[in-house]
Length: 118
Image (cartoon, rainbow, N blue to C red; front, top):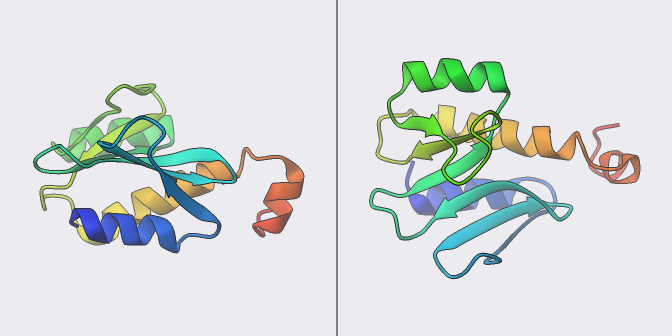
């Protein structure tokens, strides 16, 4: 998956927004104001941070060298995925979807209801 495909997939999720709260080098994706993905625009190859179930995060890091503990994030709950082509595109899409769901599931009930999660 390349940078544009990752961006497009993030924006395809319900109520996803993008912005640059940390400066022009990091594109942040949010659902209902809460971050679910960060895309490094300056990294070569590009990389993104996504939230992940802690047990699954450990498994993925062991299986894929391009999946690493979250850079500048909680290492327990976030992974950095290097978009160098070594992780299958469908799996990266799944990481993004899972991150969105994990973040959305912690939103207030009114937001979860609106998103069809409650």
